[in-house]
Length: 276
Image 1 (spheres, rainbow, N blue to C red):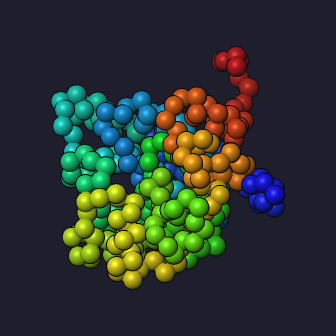
Image 2: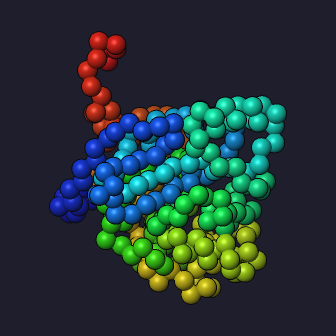
């Protein structure tokens, strides 16, 4: 049985709507909404083109069962042009959070992100996700996979090592992992993470949770989360319709392949204004 056949009984409807305002916020009728999710895409200030592209990718997605907010996360600005250009982005899109840290990959940025979120956000969310800027997340399937899961003490993602199917061992890949709000608050208040912030960020999060006897609810969404075909050994496999996230999209031809596979432009309506 191949991966597609294995998941052939899953049905996902993903109506796509335009973002209602200048923020990348995905909302449906409140009576149908069951939970809320904040997604922070960790990136760097100078990656202007990538942010603009991802605004398109996420701005056309929605879920009928979740309120999903997406923002870009980076550390303190260091260049004069950043202060001007990124100020314009904030004024136009209001989808950037600038943390009080020095830009880094494995020297505390993820800790600063999670520990700051409860303090700087204006509302509480059921879940908080950390995602890379080279991953394509399909919001409707993601929300559908979260629907039956606990709202507390939850740790969700793609468990490492690649061959493992046991979410209680080791940690979730940094491509995109999710914590329930109570765990995010714990990271901000506990001495365990505060005293251990240097090293591979995804591995550290798993270590913190284990040391704190936290995250008794763990869910690894394999094979719906994976690395792009051929990029990372056993962490990679072919694209499948039930995908939640595809990681390691470093090249534009990879993005094109993925977006075409999922037919993301299918909702485009005919208009005399363009010929495509």
